[in-house]
Image (cartoon, rainbow, N blue to C red; front, top):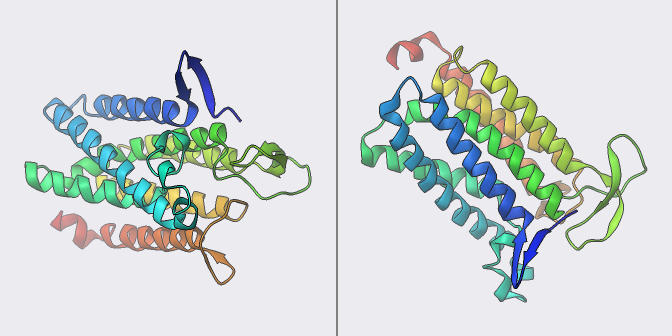
Length: 252
C-alpha cells in the first residue's frame, strides 16, 4: 500500500524497515518491562534480543533469497536490498532461537527463563511484521470476489485487484495471540508460554497461507510454508504435552 513512507532529499524511508525497527524497539521495551522484578536480567536480556534479532534478520534474508533464487540469480544486486522486504519467517525464527540458545550457554544464563520473557515479544513482533507486509504488499492474498475477507489490494509489484486481506488476517491473529500470551504470562511456566506462542503463531500463519496468492515453493499441491507451519504447530503441541507432564515439571 505504502512501500515508501517519506523522502528527504536523496534518502527514502521504506515502510518495511521503518515498521520493523519500531517493532524491534517495542519488543525490547516490553521485554525490559517484564523483567522489572528481575532487574539483574534486564541488560543481558536486551543484549540477547539485539544479537538474536540481528542474526535472525540475516538468516531470514538468506533463506528468502535461496527460496527465490530463480529471481535473484537474474537480479543479484537486489539481494542486499533488505529494506524492500523479503525475509523468511521460518528462517528468521530458527536462526534467532538458535542464536539465543548459544548466547545463553556462552553467558551462562537460563535459556528457559529467557524464552518466558521473550514469548510476548515474539507475538508482538509478528504483529509489526504483518503490518509491515501490508504496507509493502508482500504476502498478498489470492484474487477473489469482494467480501468481508477481501479488498482492493496490491501485490508485490503494485498491481491492484480484489484479493484476500491476508496481511490483516495475520495481524489480527497475531494480536489475539499476543493478548492471550500476556493474559497467561504469570499462569504458565516459561517453556509452556514459549511453546504456546510458537504454536499459536504457526497455526495463525498456516491459516493465512491457505489464502495467500504470492508465489512459493510447492510440494505437490501444497505450499512449503503451509507444510512447515503445520510441522511447527505439531512440534509445539508435542513439546507442550511433554513439558506439562508432572514429572517434567519436577525436574525443571
